[in-house]
Length: 115
Image 1 (cartoon, rainbow, N blue to C red):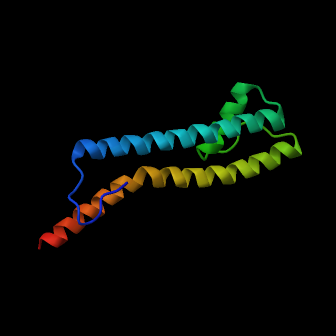
Image 2 (tube, one colour; image 1 turned 45 degrees about the vertical axis):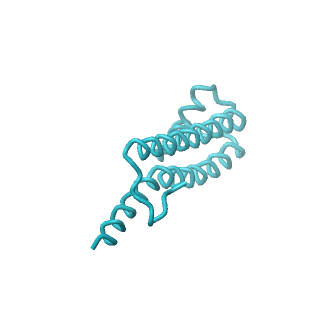
């Protein structure tokens, strides 16, 4: 997937395509995570779709829930979803940063081997 250190640096247009693929994967992860939250709040708290979306978005974004939770199942779900959201955030950032970090390290390695 990534070029070896002995290979030349990837051309800019192919690098941008790689960034686009990583961005699409990150978007899929975010949408899937948001879907889990919406369905979870809907099932455990009986929230309307819009309120479930708002709560899931706020938790996924790191802000916290908007509506008060009334059921034990809803509180347990919110706890698990908050932990899941933290892991999903870290994974998404890693997916987005990986091609940039690889290109930087590859570029630095090429400069080092030229000397």
